[in-house]
Image (cartoon, rainbow, N blue to C red; front, top):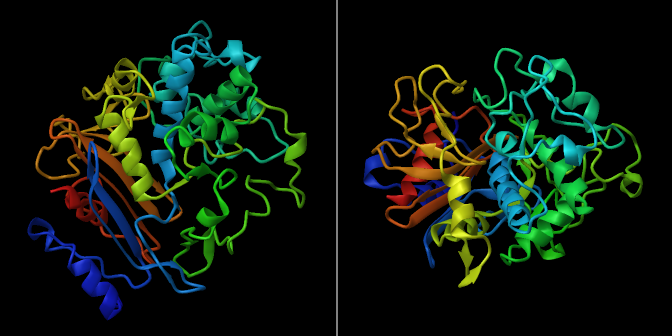
Length: 398
């Protein structure tokens, strides 16, 4: 194991608080950024490492990265805005918007709703990468395949985390509004909150593109977002040499812009979302969503009781609408990220070597947003179900 460069080691060491001093990242090439905040301001922020190895550009807490599943919280905000506008409701059969019937074949009389999809209690499951559907293909065959369902548990009765839920939500949003998912989320969420953040880069500014955090595989090759300061040649997954988005039919493939994980945002951007939730749906004094909608998102709809869900080895134990609540204290749960029983709500993410998180402590009205990326080896486990580096970053809130 190689040590960090002296400057990077000093930058990271300066951020280690006493309770976490026994752990410090040691992998050269890794990058870390965070922002702690209260309801009105950024309390502290920091970053260490390189955002782009090709240019040597240093990482800052304002640089956007693919934040993985924290993206789901952005989707929930967009859904609730449409619910408040009367264009969607959480408890109708989503088949009414999709234009085809979505049913677990073992429970054909049980409708699947947005509330169930957002809370991962829909009985839909991931089968490999069935949530990655390329341009030119349709969602319906994958979402109606019997292999995409947990046939042992009826919708609403069991928690199973599934990325496929969110492409279905994406298709519902497109059919209900007549807008392409990435542009809709920009209109509903990013612009009203003054965020220069985006799904798959399409609505981010040129200045934002120039600050992209490049993601690397352990062997040093590029995994994502080596943009060179320009829009990607194709912002969606395609298995063809051409990328003709002009022929896309709205609602046929809600997976295109990665609603399950495709937001590019910085810790400072995530802090804005955290502040919105701390302020019960208000942004800079203006209502974004109602306090009731905030409660609907954050209140656990499912809590593990020992047998009513798959916890992914103690990682998920209480879940609302695209929100996790930690810790639960239930036997079998290892979800105490902060290690002190502190109650927080938010979401974690992990993909392409990124570990991310946005967490708010509603009692104290404070929060933390962070990511770690580009570790050349799998980071060591922590004392909880989270990696040690996530626990180390979360401690910036202490």
